[in-house]
Length: 335
Image 1 (cartoon, rainbow, N blue to C red):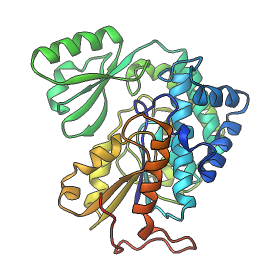
Image 2 (image 1 turned 90 degrees about the horizontal axis):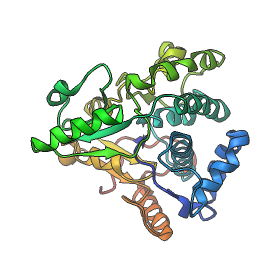
Image 3 (image 1 turned 180 degrees about the horizontal axis):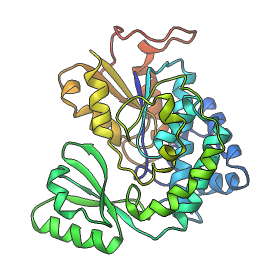
Image 4 (image 1 turned 60 degrees about the horizontal axis):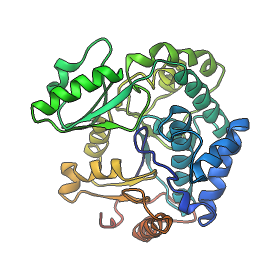
């Protein structure tokens, strides 16, 4: 049982807001996050719930904190149902959420790390991200000192990041050769050298913390392995995350290959990671299931509640409210 926690690019206005004050455990958890954000928390809550936010959801000062808040609250919600995940996998900022859910950092510590990171990235040069239907090897000619491979989401689903003008040039060239590409909702060049100086300034903040061994294993999308104590204790590892490439597919592939059957549950806005997981050969062969607790795209708030209720029903056979972690041999819900 793996929880998938999405990151940059999955955000949208009022994501999961339909659950607020309707799902008690979600509401309590997201309120805890806003409280952990301190003086900035109330403005973030108001922009999240507001019809006309004061700051674009794609700006780093909104996308990152609100993604963290929604991922964390949805993760807490499904665990409150009685789900006992065996592993957590976070994409981009989702890995910091995984660290909080696993107890590596307390919620206030993780919130502090995030805000420190966000403030530094906000002061960095602007940039963007480009999703391309191509392999890493095919995009090799487009990588430079300023443009990098930002994420490997699937064998032919790769994201580039860098300055906007460079991405526009690359996008036009790729389209002229018949490649499909689209801009990712981001106003910063996440997972690229553009953010190196800003992101690595977080080392001092992180060095003052004392991370703990995880209560739930976390498979890192940066190393593709479960986080060990040495990596967890390294402040540079955490500081480099906004710069290092996200290797989601290799991490997911390694996890699936090491188990006979896997249930993947996406706990974040949208169904981007769930859709990728469904295309994995093992899932297509019936060796697992994929469930998402949020709708695939923005819509009426009752859709949030309906999708969540359907996910809870699908997971019913795996929920054990009182204690034992679910057996890997339990029947799997249909994806």
